[in-house]
Amino acid sequence: MLLKIILPVELAAEIEPHLPSDVVTIHVDSDGNFDDNPQDAEVYMNWYYLKKTTLYKVLADAPKLRWHHTVSAGVNHLLTPTFLERNLILTNSAGVNAIAVAEFVLTFMLYHTKQIVALQTLQHQKTWVKGLELQELLDKTLLIIGTGHVGREIAQRAKAFGMKVLGIRRHPQPLPAFDQIVGLDQWRSLLPLADYLVIAIPLTSDTQGMIDELALRAMDSQAYLINVARGAIVDEPALLKALTEGWIRGAALDTFVREPLPLASPFWSLPNVFVTPHCAGTSSQLRSRLVALFLDNLNRYLSGLPLRNVVNQKLGY
Image 1: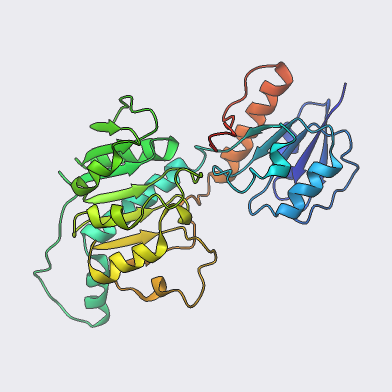
Image 2: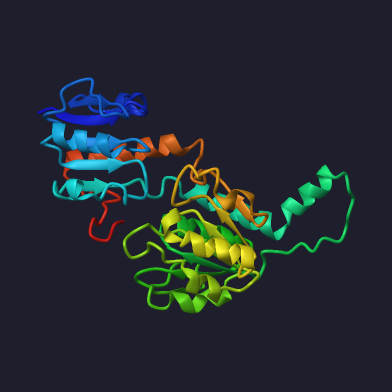
């Protein structure tokens, strides 16, 4: 019996050569236009920046859908009432960009501790100054909120630099490369200890606005915040106040509540903020990892084996 799957036009050509002969593909573009009738499709894989109108069109036009795989790690944009009422299996691509994000975080930390901006300014001014106080990551304390794929990759690399690594997770069992892990009921107690705070936790109803004014005021005045998760986890007005009033030293922000970041946003021009366009997970290896994960899960689906990266839709990750 043939299995029909819906693939995004952006990735179909890289997946199709590896499919079994009894799998038939239907292509869908970003606007929800199909190249064939999806009526009997069981599997749907979406591309990045999925529009709700496209998602709802797929759900409406593919009534036999059983499994939805998303190329993103975060799924907050998918878990709408319309989606949830279908009771589909949902898998995500958590982990495929973990190495890239972890390297980006280390780049941010080195950028800050080695005062790269100040050194570049001296270069542009053709000024030879020796005496800038450059720091080391050795013995600095890194607090990672979220110990999933990304958090663990960050921790491994931070330990290579001799950092003390603290973690926050829902279930505070010990993990390799972490010196201490606490639960969500104790996370605020670790904030004053952090030289670097990295946000790597999924956006859910529990984590929205998690980094609020109280959290920012609890941090050391020399601390540096790095957000590679979702913008809405941080109370942006409170963060803006913290950065302008000196509650913390600075921030590297790869994600924001509104994206693209509006031109009028003050974050663009703050001297102690590094803004990047939600690109920490970008890598030349990303597409091949996305394909490999989906093909492995498709083989599991065909064989009746448990799928990887199944999302707990009640928890939101």
